[in-house]
Image 1 (cartoon, helix red, strand yellow):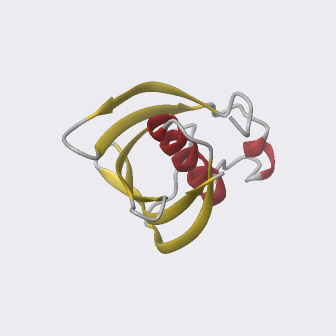
Image 2 (cartoon, rainbow, N blue to C red; image 1 turned 90 degrees about the horizontal axis):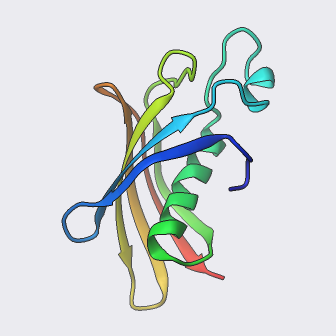
Length: 123
C-alpha cells in the first residue's frame, strides 16, 4: 500500500468471469485529508486511481504500473467523513500482449463517484 493506513479492504470477491467487487473503508483521519482540504476533506482523484491499481495488483497477483488511461470521469466528490465506505466494481481482463485492462465503477450509497478505464503493464 503506497499510503500507509489510507484504507482497508472490507471485502474482495470475484463475481462472474473477469468481474470483481471490492468494498473499502477510507480512513477519514489520514494525513492526506489535512491538506485536501482542511475542514472539508475530499478524496484526491490520484488516491482513487492508486486504490484501483492496488486492488488490481491483488486480484492479478502481479506488480503493475499504469500504462494509460482512456476514460476517467469523476462524477461526485467523496467526503470520507460522510461516506468512508466505497464499492469498487472492477472488470479485469489480461490481454495477449501481457497487459491488464481494467474498467472500474466506484460508488458510495447509490451515487456513482468515478468511472475509469485503464491499462497496466507487468513489472
